[in-house]
Image (cartoon, rainbow, N blue to C red):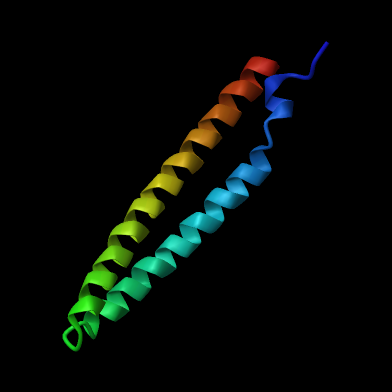
Length: 82
C-alpha cells in the first residue's frame, strides 16, 4: 500500500521556494521604486523600473496565493488522513 498523499508531497520544499520568491519580489519592488525615483535621467530606466515594479507585484501576489493554497491543501489532506 502506498503512502498517503500528504506524505508524498514535499510541502516544506514548496513553501520554502514560495517564501523565497515572495521575499525576492518585495526586493524587486523596492528596487523598482528606487530606480523610478531617478528615471528622469534616462527614458529606458523608466521603462525598466516599470517592468521591475509590475513583475515584482505579480510575483509577490502569485507567491502569496501559492503559499495560501499550499497551506489549505496541507490542512485538508492532513484532516483527511486522520
